[in-house]
Amino acid sequence: ISEWSFKDLETQIILEQKRNFTQKAYPGLKIEPGTDPKKNIRVLTLRLFRSEQAALDSHRQGIKKLFQICFPDNFKALKKDINISSGIKQIAPFFNGQIKFSNSLFNLITTALFEKDIRTKKAFELHAQKEMKHLYTSGQKFITTIIDLGKAYQSCFELIQKLTFQHQKKKKTFDILTALFKDLKNLVPENFTDLYTIERIQHLHRYVACIRIRVQRSVDNPLKEEKKALQLTGYIKQLNRLLSSLSENSTLQRSQHIEEFFWLLEEYKISLFAQELKTSVKVSAKKLDQFLIKLTTMI
Image (tube, helix red, strand yellow):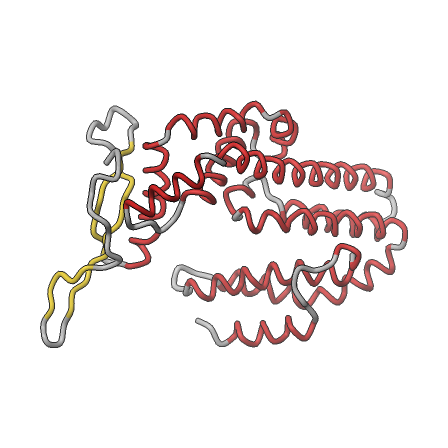
């Protein structure tokens, strides 16, 4: 498939229907290896899926691929804008290096803008008309968001390293700084652009700022920082227990709720340590407790 040359797609079709049995299939686009194994070319096809979720996931990826096939120059220009950005080059060493980071960022932006459940030619053309004329501006906004986060991360990273070296003989302060450094790297790992949506990334700047505030205050008053941190201990243990309980048999709903609890805990940290940053949602110990109770009833 190299253009929208097929009929509009239903979300499902009935293959066979009997009195007590209905066999359904779910149509969707699929990216597959090409016919020549020597060439690393992936092609776009139309397939039927047994699972509705599998069809949806594959189709959304296929729609993004179809936009790339139909508008190659626009996507090449976006990739070039990312590659030549001096800000991206500056922060790339913290995030798997220039090539991997740029490719990951390109994938993040194109996924946010074009990985959609579009099933009619008209909707495809309307979305193209809407997004392509603003792709440069949209791309620059995404790039700026990533650069701002990367610079905040770099600043916090370097501050912790400096203060850890200065206070290495003060065990309490050193231990707090070491734990906060681990928190920073867990919050914004090297592959964060592969893990998080752009909507989630837009919140990371506040969470990094919260860690930075905690770093500075732990040097000024380590006992106060330690006392406040005790209010987190139980929730962090619960989070780790929940994460370790996840398996391939866990439902998608449970996985999503555990992730939601993780981010709710980040907001709670802001309410405890850096109220001046303001939380994006109302959060309290009571709300966390209620959330945990709900999680215990899920498979």
